[in-house]
Image (tube, rainbow, N blue to C red):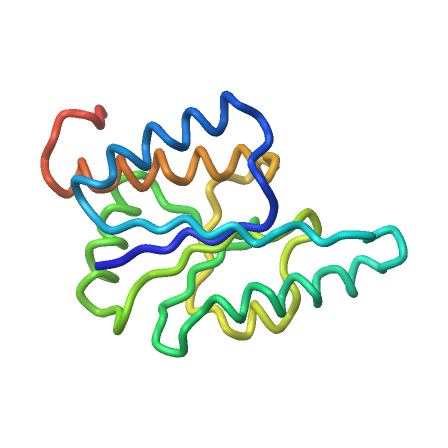
Length: 157
């Protein structure tokens, strides 16, 4: 199964890049993971929040195939424990037609067109984190899920 992790904007802080790289490298043993960065919009001061979301949505939707199963990482999504997320991944890996695409939006979230295209929404926490931190948290949880599925000792309860 192929997993695509699509996000808007660069990861600027070196410590976050290092952490993301660490888990991406570990994930190569379990799955094909592709990171896709959507460039941040330029000259956004002249744009309203809605216009900015709409322009980001155009860029996001161009990267998604019709057969992809799209999961938004969204504050209003369902919350799962790490074990529940592992089971969710396992179930989706069997039923997803092409691949799974997890998406983190820009600073204002998603345009309605992206919500309309999404198959699921997941929340990593009720707390608010920067979009850059969510990237690290997500790849770590993805790694944790695969170790749970394989019965490896990374996850402790």
